[in-house]
Length: 147
Length: 147
DNA sequence: CAGATACCGGACAAAATCATCCGGTAATAA
DNA sequence: TTATTACCGGATGATTTTGTCCGGTATCTG
Ligand code: FES
Ligand code: FES
Image (cartoon, rainbow over all chains, first blue to last red):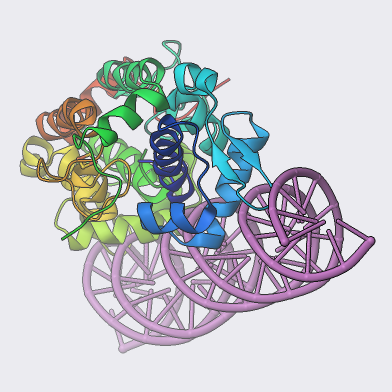
C-alpha cells in the first residue's frame, strides 16, 4: 500500500504527536525508533522530509528532539504526510498503471477503483495526526506489536 | 497500489482474454507487449508466473502463443492474478506496516482501512478476467493510452 | 527428418527502495 | 567559552524490484 518510508513516517508523526500532547514534551530519535519499532537511521531521513515539509517541528541540542506544535496537531492531515513522502501516485494514478487515470480512455477497472480510491483519499484527508495520536494515547490504537 | 509486474500481468491477462474470445485465437508475446505497452521480456516473466499458476494457457511452436480456455475465461478472477504475482500482502497486511493486522492491537487507522481493503478484495474477487476482456472488446475500457 | 517458430528457464544488469555511517551544525548548560 | 547533546546532510552500501539476454525445448510445417 504505502512505502516503508511512508509507514515509518506516519507512525513516527503519530508518536511525536502523542508525546508532545502531554505538555509539549520533545522526543528524541532513539525514542521514536524504539517506540514505533523502526530502523533508527532510516527513520531520521524520513523525519527530515517531514520537517522540511513543515509537518513536524525539530529542535537541536540537549533537551531537543521532535515535536508537533498545537497548530500542527490540529491541522496536519495524513494526506499531507503521505504526499510529502510517497507523492501522489497512489492517490491519483491508474490502478493498472496507465499513464493517466481519467474517464477518457479509462482502464477496465477504472469505475470499480474510483470509489475505493475516493474513500482512501477521504480517510487520509479527514484524519489529522493529532486525532490519531489521541487514539494511541487512549489505548485504542498501537504503533508497534507487543506480543 | 500494485507492483509493475502485477499491472502488466493484469493487463496482459485481459488482452489475452479479449483475443482468445474471438474463436480461441492465440496471441504472441510481441503482440501482447505492444498492445498493453509493456516491456516485452519482463512481460514474458510475468506471463510465465500466470501459466505456472494455471491462470493462462500457453502453446509453443508456430501458431503458438497465449490463450484463455473458455473455463479460464469464466472462472479466473483478478484476485487470483494478483495473488499469483504480488502475494497477499496488499490484500491482508496492515496499512501502517505492523507485523499483523488484527482487532487485537490494531493500528490507529485499522478501522478506517478495513472497509477500504474489504471493498478492494470484493472488487478483485467478483470480477473475472473474461468479463473485463469483454469490456475492452466493447470499447468500454482500454489497456494502454493512445494519445 | 529438417527447419522455423515461440514459449521456457536461468543468468545477468539497471534502477528504485531500504538502510547505515559519519562528519557538520545548532542549541543548551556548566 | 567549552563541552555535550541531538538533529542535519551527504556519501555509501544492501536489498528488492524492474528489466534484459540468450541458449534450451517443445511444436508445427514442409
Ligand atoms: S484509468 Fe485505471 S483506474 Fe482510472
Ligand atoms: S492493524 Fe493496521 S490496518 Fe489493521
